[in-house]
Length: 325
Ligand code: SF4
Ligand code: MG
Image (cartoon, rainbow, N blue to C red):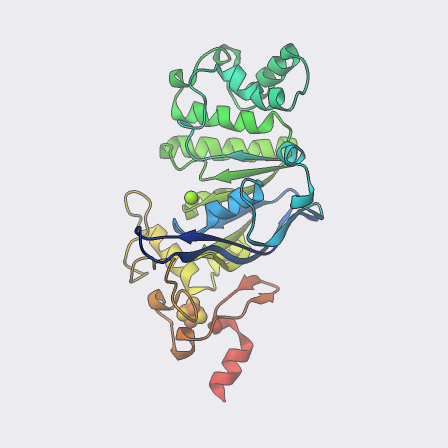
């Protein structure tokens, strides 16, 4: 496999003011991320809401510039690529199929719209192409002239997927694509995405707070916490031999799910910290059951090894030596 997307030292910060006269504070939504997306893989990105995963998705889609660092598509810095050229190669599927489809357009018009924007083919060719893609996502011809409000949530998400695929992209960035759907419909959409990946040789970045969903679809997983990747490894390894205490806590929370998909307090102790005032040292230390003195002051070093990536002192051989000394 070779890298389709290379994310190098990417940060994104926002100036946030809390109240009219309060001094502005800097929110480090994405804080020094290094990741590659290999051709043909499904890279899952998981973490609680507010961890920066949607901000990262927007940067990958070219919808939001990075504050620093680079994102390269096939080795080319995306900033040097034409916006339209990027849109032909990378397409999004977002969470909410209710708000992302224009209610005044028919399904065929919605799916053909990217072709019209890019001036690809005649009107008739665009419609025929839209019908062909609708068929691929399991929506027969009779849906073509209906409107979004005549469709179920799952059918609308199929339309959103068709709209992404009509451009024949290489990479599809899915941000919580099944989170608004009933559980039974979720698995249909996940299986559809897997079939489409096989049929069209697609690559996905798949963002979700839901570990069960990610386990089903991803080949590798990156776990994010407060704007950083804390662990990254193959999916099977992540679920069977997690290394970072945060990953372990997330996995424990899957066994006792909360309504709404939130992470139960049990296993993670304190609530998610204020991203405007991130804890010093290891950002996870206030919630970490394994935290020790150094965790409160020293930022964990990134460890890359045959198992993947982890940022935790417990897995840093130098830290183990220093503690033993
Ligand atoms: Fe926990 Fe320390 Fe590892 Fe952070 S570095 S995850 S606080 S053990
Ligand atoms: Mg989000």
